[in-house]
Length: 570
Image 1 (cartoon, rainbow, N blue to C red):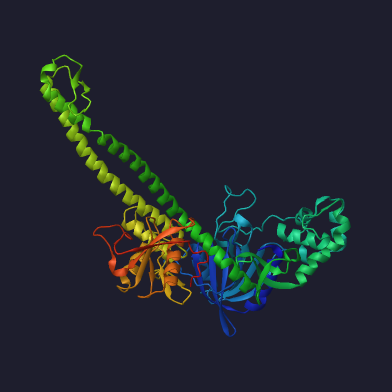
Image 2 (image 1 turned 60 degrees about the vertical axis):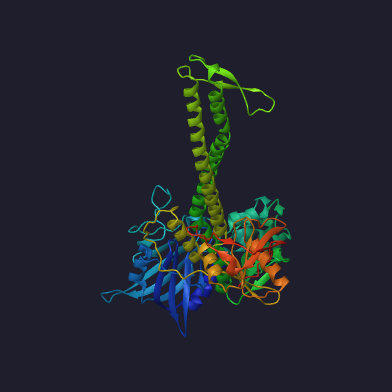
């Protein structure tokens, strides 16, 4: 959301929203507000976000759930804005600040004007609600003197705008002023343009340099000589809107455009009728991914810490098991002492005894307790042997339990990578609560009940429907909710999704396609060839007391496939 993009957005929103009535206000995230507006003949939603990296304002089609307890900004906005009408949307000082003004009648019948200021400045972005006199009623981010020495943004204070940048406004550029300002400046042209003209990020400045010199990284000895061409290039940008998303050949969104960048001539563009439509399409997926990354970060750390804990414990348990495996020598020493008691005298520290288990007729050295005779020392070695045997059984049980826990945690890490929405993430978190890895706490930001997440859906080349679980809840639901003769698949000996072919007689082509899906959504996805087991659903069972997602199966057929590259999901 650079200055020129905001210039177009403010103009679009002013034309579209002036006179609209504010019917509903939500604050789905701490840094995001959605206004539901009634315009002539239609209802629209205005999204305002100050999330760093995704800060923006535009009309949206995205529906979000609100927390059970609204935030302070949401409550103040409802008090002062609900039922009011938008009176204007404008950009302030050609900067990255949008002012949305609204007229509202309070409980006493007095009419007043309130303003929502949208400041889009990276990590310093904010949403500020101003009263009639210009004082701050509430803001998304409270900025006190410890966070900023330039200005405080706190409820009750008079609002002060961001420090003046001292640059020329891009929308009122004058050639003479530009010549005077840029005269004698040398170096990289894009850097000079960005440093002297407001509202331009480096990408925009490089586009201006490209339009002037044909090279985005061009340098100059005197930028003042290029001032007329610079002014013209920026005016051309402002006067020729073209709303699009720049994409890679594979269709991945790379950038939002409010006009066509000539320096990106070789890129693929998906064009839109309005800037809001383009912004909604571009930012929605990007913002969703970033929020999922943030919300899953704590789970990622928790699962990783538990995996490290289990791996360390397994190392110790393996060492204990290996030590116990060598306990047979205790029994042999005890038996040799019982067989040759006459060779042992009290006070001896050790003795060399014939080893009847040695086919070569060798001897064995036995360490002795000086205070005990042969029988006492033998009983001591038998006790050591029994103790080691008990320790061996315990270590073996702990090893099996630890390996099972490690498999479960690695599976949860795999499931976490498949979470694409809050529902699937909430289900995974709830499972970790039930299994004791997370302590359940009540959050003031708790949202309304989320809808159940849906499994991934695929279609084989012949149209056969294939489903794959995103988490253990979905895996068990798919596996044990399928028809007995339907085909169940899972990558062999690695964590991964349970896959169901919704057919009792799939073709070999469909079976291989489903196997490639199972390989793609497993811990072996980076391998060139993956073994995948396939069996009828009726042969898949869940052992009593097993962890979520764990099953046993028989009558399987194993195929080797490459993981699916294009997921082709719906």
